[in-house]
Image (tube, rainbow, N blue to C red; front, side, top):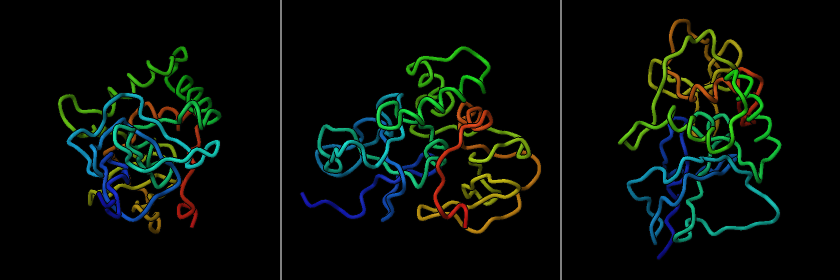
Length: 210
């Protein structure tokens, strides 16, 4: 079977998986989402431990969408992956995982959870029970830390950065716009927002600094 191009494996800040010719800075997975071909099935996750992985680790190589192997997903940057409900991998990104876990522990003000418990709590915040879509939350725009994602009034995902928002695309961020006041439709799960507020600094695409 000829592999289509592009594959449907690029994740948006809202958690959707789309087919666009852009890869991004990170990969990750939610389990086996494709069949024997290169087409995704109806499921958008098969387990709770959604992780953010490095593109290169110990020289390992994978053929994309190998049957019965986990589906490789790609994110523009780490902030997008956090917004979609993922967290750093404890194997290929151990230092980032430890930093994230320490920030989660401080941000939640509770004993450090084991990884399965952290994944369970994060899953409660991101997944709509019985549906194939992710939750959104409501938060005060003024209190959101850098690295969180919101929906603009036009329904566009945007990154909070300083006193501005940076509109997102699969290929990078657009010019900054002033951060509005009032309530925001929050995409990043509260647990990941707590980690950002406690000092976790996700890697951002270079266009965020343009």
